[in-house]
Each structure stands twice: as C-alpha cells, then as structure tokens.
Amino acid sequence: MNPRLLVGVLALQGAFDAHARRLAELGVESRLVKDISDLDDLDGIILPGGESTTMSNLLVASGLGTELSHRIQSGLPVFGTCAGMIMMARTIQDGRPDQMSLDAMDIQVRRNGYGRQNDSFEQDISVTSLDSPFHALFIRAPIIESIGDGVEVLASVNEHPVLVRQANALASSFHPELVSDLRVHEIFLSIIHESLTTSKR
Image (cartoon, rainbow, N blue to C red; front, side, top):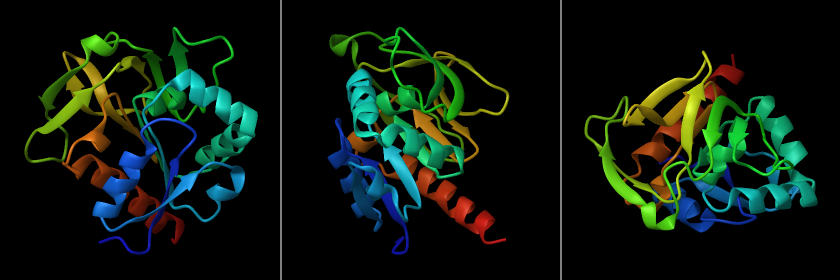
C-alpha cells in the first residue's frame, strides 16, 4: 500500500482511466490532470498512451504543456507509455513540425515504429529487477532509435529498448496499464519514493 502518494494521470486523451485503475489496485491515490491547477501537490505524473499529436495539440491549447515541462525539468517523476513516451522524447521522428516535446528524456523515438494497428503484438520481455518475464502489449508502438549516455535500458525487444529510465523519468513503448501485472507501475512508484527520499535529505 502507498497511502501517502498522489500520482497524476494526464487526462486530455488516451488510456488514462486504465492507469488510474492500476494505481488504485496498488493502493495509490490518483488525480486526473486536465489543467494547470491539477499539477499542484503531485508526487509524480503518468502520461498515457493514445494519439501523441492530439495530446500535443491539447497540451499547447490548454497551456498545460509549458507548466508540465517545467515541473518535470524541476524533478517531478514522470512515466510515459507509448504516446506518453513520444511526448517525453528529446527528438521525435515522423512527428508534426509543431508537435510539442516535453524534453523529459534523452531519447530519439519514431512514431508508429512497429507499424500500424494491425501490426500490434504481445510478447514476454525480460525487465531488469523483475524475477520473471513481463507480458507486454505493443499497440501502434513507437521505436526508440537512440538513447543518450544517461539513459538506462531496463528491457529490449530485438535489440531495441522498450523500457528506459533516466533519473526521475521512466518510459515504455508498450502498455503496462492494459495487463493485470502491476510490476512496471511498481517500478515507477519506487522512482517516486527515491525522489521523495532524496528531497528530504
């Protein structure tokens, strides 16, 4: 149980409800984030899968994007899945010229790198720190084409990273919110706890 944590879930578009359900199963309070005031007092935030260009447009139109980027750069732990990972990337291939990047992680990604909807697949993957494989769902998934020196690869598929961490940021090409296995969300919660412990020193 994690009764003292409050984790935001960006709720402009995409699979935010599924993330909120996974947090509830872990005993964590969540808040759907739709405007700037919803960012107050959060211990971390999840950027869900969905349509990255639509999310980008809504972040810009609401004014939420600039403030969210600022808080992430200031150390707010963030976990992006699929489209959320795209928005976190420093460089986005095949994105729209005006697509917003939160620049939360030193990675280069390609949108729909694994193909379109009918190319979706599922696969057991080995994840660093987990003692058994995680069953991962890839739906119109982005490919991580390159990573910076400070990025740690936690899982790969065919030599492409699919779960990566850099400081307080975690990102996945797949959708852990769509399976019953809670262990990837637990990795993010451990990052939040690390951040809170460090901030109290």
